Image (cartoon, rainbow over all chains, first blue to last red; front, side, top):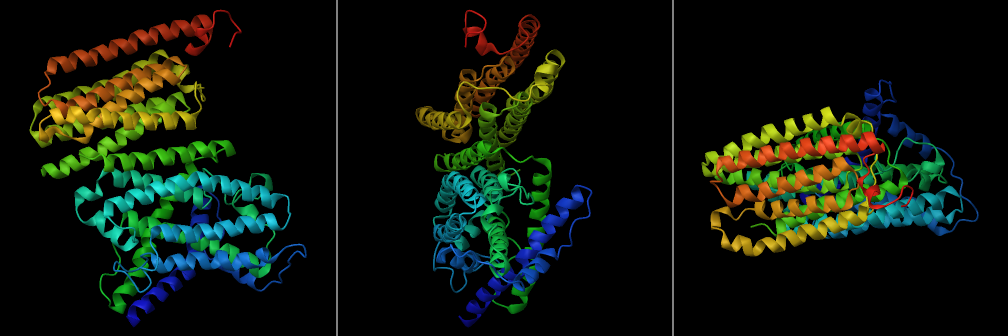
Length: 316
Length: 224
């Protein structure tokens, strides 16, 4: 039991340590694809270090929500990490605390408070970004629900560790149409939720076009660092859920030996690297959608998820 | 080969086939529409090959070969030759219904397709109760829906061809020994259809300057 708690905490440490690296690698690779040099892959760490050592300025007119939000944004991905398989294929100590729906709610809580905090400061760009994120959010919600419903219907459970076993049980499960369609729908969801290119441009610094970034415009110093780090962890957690639960649940530790769990770290990072390569291709080959086209993009994701559900529920 | 694995991959082809059918309804670009139709035809051919291998039926392999030649290669080639600028120069095409609404209507049609096939499936022998039948019917309905919402000549033609694809997708699962001559006849029919519609569209384009068939509903020019 003590080991399981320890491994669970190790998972959290891995996610905290490598989330900025994943963002750094993604940014660097994108620049390389566009024939630019790009910042070092360690740049996100340097940014965090710099921000943690700077003074924080907080508007006098803001309320407790503004001060409280960075901590919440930082903590919610950590909670989710306790619930999902990052390194091991067997459930760890806190795995049964909540299921996938619960994890989704916890992640949504962070997003909700970030939107409130953006409205709180009365910066004109904050509320605009907040309302846009809400728009993307409520369009993404039905897709999430259908994906989770189908996944739990297939596996007969909503605990991610049990779902993960389902796909690799046999080759015909892996090639099941519902599985492949769910993967496609979930990639589109990750793009929308993490503010990646067809929906939002993470590198854009033009306030009027921002969706995700404008919510954190008012933060400085420690608050900005926590918001940034939290966002990177959320992206990392989404990738872990996608890879370890839905797509390729291989390379995870099966036994309780410490060596095997440690070996799982580079394997999981390698999987994430491959997924980042796919993301780079997607991001470099698509243009950012106009705001009112986002509903079409997420509508397509919804249709994909529902098609997955139909081919599963009405399977003969 | 292991038949269960073949049938699983066939089911996957079915899922992607359905996705392509959705795409044909909602794609904004003529070219994207055509590419999705090509992908859909390739999936149809793949499904025919897989079912042929799973059931040891040479007729289905023949259907696959004819489809593989006619639909993904010859039909797009004819269209490109005849209507080059219609496919490559036009980026956006308008629809009678906006895209989220048509997506939801398409979804309802797919569910209707699934329900309508239940009695048909009961009449079939257990081995051919495949997802193909329902997906094929859904593809048929989605093609018909494409005809209803599109207003341009080329996407309308693609809608008709997608309907045919759907009918074939259901057909290859229902009868193993579809006479080959029927299949050949239908394939050449499709080619002639493309040829005739291509000529008509070209004439329309030359005389009116556009292929917006939806505008032909008004009696006078300028009326909406």
